[in-house]
Amino acid sequence: MKAKLTRELIAMRAAKELFEGAVVNLGIGIPTLVSGFVPEGLTIVFQTENGALGFGPLVGPEDFARLADVDLVNAGGQYLIPVPGMCFFSSLESFAMIRGGHIDITILGAIEVSESGDLANWMIPQRGVGNIGGGMDLAFNAKKVIVTMEHVAKDGRPKIVKKCLAPLTAPGCVDLIITDIAVIEVAAEGLALKEIVSGWTLDEVQALTGPRLIVEKPPKIIEL
Image (cartoon, rainbow, N blue to C red; front, side):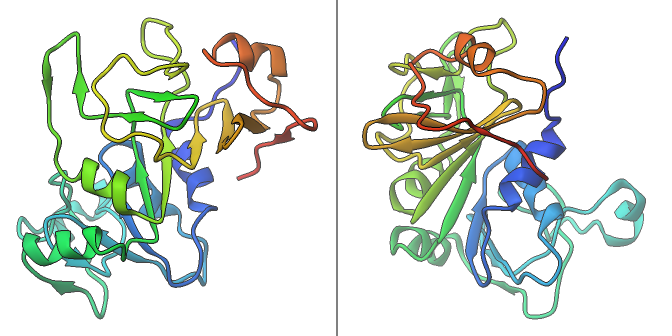
C-alpha cells in the first residue's frame, strides 16, 4: 500500500497556507491540529465560534493535568493553551466577526467537495444526523476556505465528487483542498492538481477522484 499523509501531516501542510497576522478559524477534526504546526516566528490569531480570540494550540496529553481548563475550550470542546493577549466574548460577538468578513482563513473538514467548490460537511446522510454549528457562516463569509480531509471515504468512495450528494453547507465556497495524497486548487475552470504525495502518480490520484483533474504542469511533491 502506498504511503499517505497522516492526519497530523495533512494539518502540517495546511499550516503552510497561513500568513503573518491572519485571523484563522479551525473546524472540528483535522483542522484543529493545524494550531500545533504554526511556523516558528509567525503570529496567527485563532478564533473560535464559542467566543475566544488569540489562543494557542491544543493541550497535549503531556500537559493535560497542568493546563486543561474546562472553561478554556474551542467549539469542539477541546482544551486550549492560553497565550498573552487572549480574549473572550459572547457567541453573538463571535458570529458578528465571522459574518462581518473578519476571518481571513477557515480550515474545515468535509464529507464531500464538488468540482465547483461546493462543500458538504454538516450531515452524514447514511446516519441521518448532523450538526450545522458555525460551518455555514464560516463557509459563506471567510475570505479563504481550505478543506482538509482524507481523499476517499472509509468505503473507498471518492470524497471529491462532480456533485455533492450530502446536504450542502455552502455552494462554491472552497478555495483549496488538502488531502492525504494531494493538494488541489478550486479554479474557475475546475479542480487543478498542484501537489501529490511522493510515490503517487497522476493516474493513481485521478482514479480516486470523481471529477477530471486539471494538470497544466507536472504536480509538485508535497513538502512539509
